[in-house]
Amino acid sequence: MRLAISAIVLFIISCAPQRDRIVVPVVNNDFYSSALTRIDDDLEDDADNLKLVEQKLYYCDLLDWPETCISALDELKRQKGMTPQLLDQYMTYYSRHELYQPLLDVVDRWSVEFDLENEYRREKILGLVRSSRRDEAYRYLLTYMADRNTTEDFKFASSSYLELKDSLMASFFMGRLSQQKPDDELVLEVYPYLLFDLGYEERSFEILERKAAVNPDDYLLLTDLANKYESTGRLASARDKLKNFIEIDTVVYRIADLYLKEDLWDSAHRSIDVLINRDSLNRDAWFKKATMYEDRGWLSYSLNYYDHVVYLDPNDTIALERATLVREKIAYLQRLKIEEDRLPLPVLKSKRLINNE
Image (tube, rainbow, N blue to C red; front, side, top):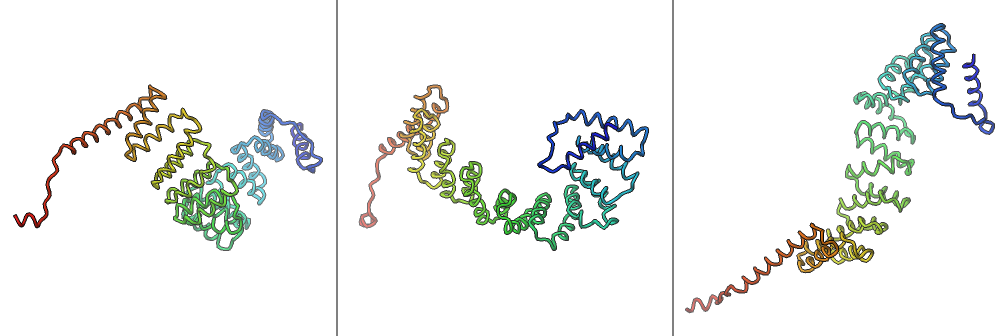
């Protein structure tokens, strides 16, 4: 009786209008599990008590215990027979707890009998997709989408094809979705990357630029967009996406590298100078400057910068090794120059003089 009264009170509270709803203190899960234990004890003496079975279903649902819920549903079915309402409860529990094979079993067995095939088509498609029954999933998806064109339909088809790893069909329905709802999460978060991978770069950049315009301070988004521009050779566009984040040292190095890819040496050096002006003891900035000069072949300048790094930290073994290597390069080139100066230059005569002789 106590359990029945508690259930009635909770039901009345849940059905009350929002403005009149009473705030109920949070009940510890032990209360529900204890109630469930008492119900099971009562059911041992009265297994056909339908109210006890319904109370069991109520409490195990609150506890989120799917196996116990299903056993309660099975007991209800044994006593009352399957009904459309009970079928809906089965589908709800199986979907919520991702039990897709039982879901397919129950929908195949009962949806036709109650003429509810259309109502459960999405659940069946999802069950087929998650059960890796690809051929059936494709067939049902094609039939399902033949005469549907709502936003929710396009989202469902896009997500289903993504799970089936069919990027082309997923991008097709995301394209339809973008026409109806251009700010949908799927359109902004997934669609441009699918387009990019499929080779539709311009459309991909269009969507990403629109997203970036709304989120100009989104560092991850802008750096990802810069990566994509760089991968397509649009280095100026890549730098443009990074310019708002030059307070981050790694971004400055990235911008310098992008300049170097276009052989814009002066601009690259000016970028590194920004870091040095910001912190004159920045070892990495001085080292970067040294490697840039070394790569360009200006070894004397490079050696000066390596030596400066060693001056900042005499224990910097990497800088010491690089400075030694550059010194060896300079010494080698000097020896070549000396040898070249010692070699006698051949006296070249014109062909006419040789013939006259």
